[in-house]
Length: 589
Image (cartoon, rainbow, N blue to C red):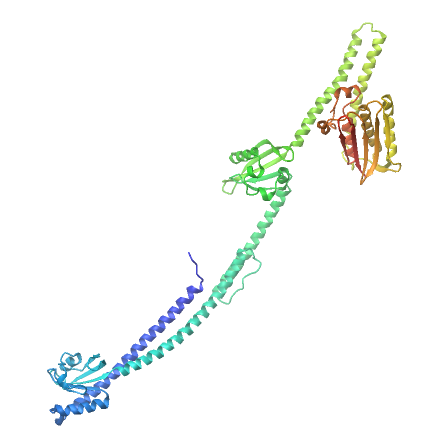
């Protein structure tokens, strides 16, 4: 429906009332003036009729139609009136404008009929004789029926001209007054509209959220009350909006700062809210997921099914699911239905926990327990078996006894090495970072030389040369015994897996803000699929050779923990048939 401005509801009625009033005044005034002129003319004609009757009553004229005709014509010329004398039977005996013989019977004329009845007669009609409107006044000779009638008539042309002039003047006056009234009505309407327009502009500002500028209070009491009420409303709205925004900001701050990944969906499974932890976990953009179906935004059907089940459940729902992000991650999902104040379901909230690392740690723990059990069981079984053999023989030969005892000693040493490495790992895990590790600024070359010296005997037995490359003045804040132990493990590994006549290079050099230690061998190398796991406890690439060479399977794990205790790390680069390079980086700041 089309809407119009308020001024067009006020101005036209005002103008219509003014015009109607002026029109009514014009009509009444015109009628009153016309009636007054007609009454005046009638009185004038009645006076002339009386004069005519008095004149005709003279004995010389009463019975002399010719003389009456002559006197009537003269009197008609003098007074611009038409004079007619009519007998009681309606015959015209005298007429100042027309010969009486040619005039018809006038008994039926209204004014004549009234005069024949003995009273004053009056009529206004169009005269066919002179072709104009006339006023006729007829007076009986005696105030009784059946007497002669004296009639005087006057054209109304002058009256009509006078009325036309009066109408023109009144019309001009009415037009002027109408224009003035229209202008005045427009000004009044505009004055009424101005406060309303200001209130409307203020209401528009309030609707746009601009509640700081109050409305100007006009002088009119009603509009002033309206403006004050709207200003009070705006102030209350501003307070409530501020409180709501503060509460929303607090909720968003808590929501976005939560460590847990949280997302909420509506009843149509469209995402309505998601926090930063969930964005990072799922690898999505907030602008690309909000308002979109969960399957379309995240692309995981298992998560969609879980959200659907959470909407249908009455309590807490839990499950585990896998999401493909950069890598496959295992999530523990907990979901429950969201309800509004009336208890109706309005969506569901889902909390996601990344349990990939926990699951891997659990698997590593299980592998560790299994490996420890296996590694400890092997030497214990060997020791137990040879002890039982010695006990079962009644008179063992010295050669057998010595051989069995040597095997028992070797397995005991192996068992001792495993236990010692486990204790070392335990000690390193109790100092997981540099803040708990005691360090000192020590020269690096002596540490490298001491580690190489400890491995020199084993290297000489295999015909392997250890080459050291380290600046004499290189120093760094380290824990010398731990760093030496890590280098010993790396050099021992390099010697074990190198062939006779090859060279193991030990390098130490600064790089930016780190001390870099490298152990390079020319051995068989490590398969690419094994590189990620070689630092796990008891993990061996070649189990048979490792056990044959006396390895415990914990050396590289110890190196990793030593590097981490120094806030550093250890990496490996290797290729089959071309050797391996183990690099340990230790920050110096």
